[in-house]
Amino acid sequence: MTEERVAVSCGPVSLTETRLRERITRFESERDILPGRVVPVVDADRVGALVAALAVRASGGIPLLGDERWDPNLWAGLRRLGDDAEPALGMAWATFSSGSTGTPRVIVRSEHSWSASFPGVTGLLDLTDRDVVYLPAPLASSMSLFSVAHSRSVGASILLPRAHTVSAADLAHATVMHGTPHALRAVVELIEGGARHRLRAALVGGAHLDHVVRERAEAAGISVVSYYGAAELSFVAVDADGLGYRAFPGVEVREAEGELWVRSPYFASGYLGAATGPFATSPGAFRRDEQGWATVGDAVDANPAEFLRLRGRRDGAILTAAATVIPEDVEAALRLIDGVEDAVVFGLPHAGAGSLVGALVETSPGRPLPSVRELREQARARLALSHLPRRWFWTERLPRTASGKPARAQVRDAALSGQVRRLG
Image (cartoon, rainbow, N blue to C red; front, side, top):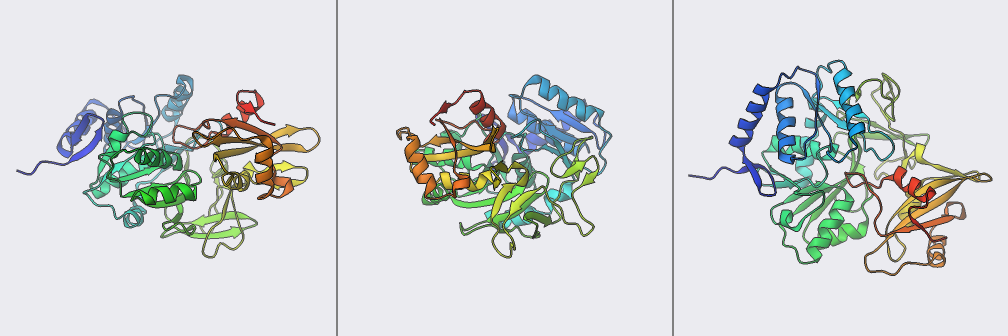
């Protein structure tokens, strides 16, 4: 008799497909879930949270997975939003914006908006029902929830992290991972430290992927596919070979006045309730034209005919002494400085210049603390004078969101309040 494969596991806990379906059925029988109703789910038991989410979806409801580490007041407010909202008939999934600035917005989308992209992702990863997909980001992250839905459609096993970090024990089982560049770097460091692994492919999004991390991963036998997207737009562009971002299958891109516009079948439907954001300047007024093109305000170089050169959100630009500085441009240059592992660039208020460019750098483990003189000299070789950081700060580890993205608002607040060491 052939042993039934594991459908989902987390540390010592594992559920076969039969056992998973039994738990989903029991959950459905114990709850009265109305079609189109957003159902908040938060549980420190990751397998329990996943079972609840799948049961809500099977009942026609819309699961909204949270993170048990969030402040109770924040989560209570999000719960009320779900409870107070009108039923979102025709919707299947609810996720959050990245949450790197302010309170996360709740985004709702149809089943098709994700399932339409499944063949493209399956092809990029050569994913089959024999794979074990590792999801180191929290289930509250849209990237993890997407991969739950995708893995279930393919029949691949889902591996949830046993802690809020990548572990060597998990790597012994996973064959594919979907996570942030920060998570991939942690994986590479474990492997280089001697951890045994079975990883053959990694899907990486959510932030800039340094080419050195890609090379280190590939040297360890991991094929890396990085992508650009947004929680509102889903997949937009993909880089499967390290040469640059091209439009994801099924996606059209164009540039208008320095802004990236996208047309695809993968869009979310909008924000829950009366929220506004990059996809909606006012409730119900989405940034979408009559031809189906939409934008979340990302800056891009003109004429993205083949490769996209993305430059971050336009509303994150720093205006300093009549110059417009895109933080991602400066961050890319700072990562090239010897000993700098990562960096976050932000604006600091200044009476004369409007804003000064500030930078918090994270140094490589074991490297000595760089001097301001060294940082300025190497930055000056790569940046225009208007883009040079005027204030430098240092940390051993950048603060990050639960999904691994740099927590930009937290970085700026830490610099202003003196919580991180100022170098000059």
